[in-house]
Amino acid sequence: MPGTRKLGRTSDHRTAMLRAMVTFLLENGKIETTVTRAKEVRAMTEKYITLAKQNTLASRRQALAFVTKEDVVTKLYNEIAPKYADVNGGYCRITKTGPRRGDAAEMAIIELI
Image 1 (spheres, rainbow, N blue to C red):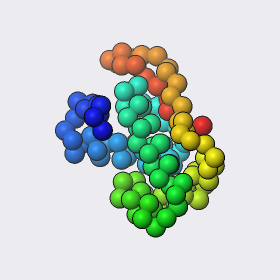
Image 2: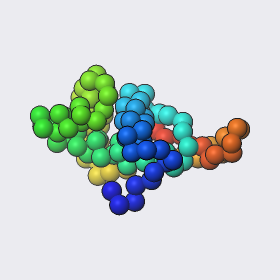
Image 3: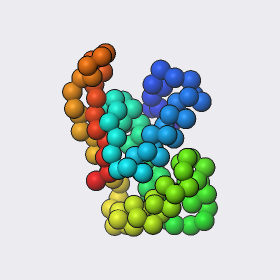
């Protein structure tokens, strides 16, 4: 992706953080984080929901390579993807919640619609 945000981390650390956050979002449906992280997580989550709508073995293996928990991938394919079968994108909502107390970073809640 040409406009990838670096988020102040090395590429390995950034990938690991995004994998964990996408997994957590798919598992729980909602997380609170900074606005810039939320925008990156939204892009990755929507990519994997769109992939899951194909429901092929190859797409499932591709999702398993990124999402860190097998049961979350099962939930993605059996519950989440069928819910968005007739929707083209826009599966996540980002709601800004104001600055964080410690460092005044702009916080947001990202959730599956």
